[in-house]
Image (cartoon, rainbow, N blue to C red; front, side):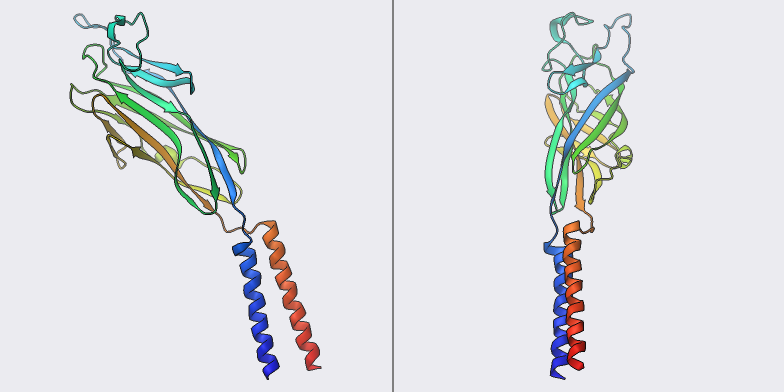
Length: 261
């Protein structure tokens, strides 16, 4: 009787150890890394000059650090003339810039709200005539993973920029989660979820409507964030540990049978 109870305790211990090794301490963290990038295209709503007014000014530019078509500029180009003979500096005009964003984390532990993309908006106090009251631009955002596998996908938005009279705050709308929900990645043992916009620093953001508000002469940053979660799939090494534990169960069972005989 005592031998049977001892064997039951041994069996229970081996089972617990096998499962713990396979799904607990045997798990290894995976490096999740990549880059988020953005670009602009298709300006619409910028008006030609009227009889009394000069032309409105808006254009898409390249930036040295982030590449082609990564910045929208608009408003009064200072002393450059209308249209500008000399490109205005970022301090003279409003700018919306897609900034390359690198990320690198280990999963597990699971990582929440990791910044995978960045929009930076400087809202200059520009003159009324050369500043379009309202215009739109298409924004393409892409995420490229390099670890644990090469994966990439793209989300597309149409942003509407509205310029009110100074000193009132201006707005950018169209930052809704629907295009972000369409991003799809099949990373091994890693789930990418809850991709969303998150305001960093000054300004305000209504996530339900996608409306971003920024005051005059203020720089506001909008982050694109995501959660990285490890899936419950054991690695080959942990499967080997589970197999070793099950083999131990068979050995204990054989010894118990031999004792009976």
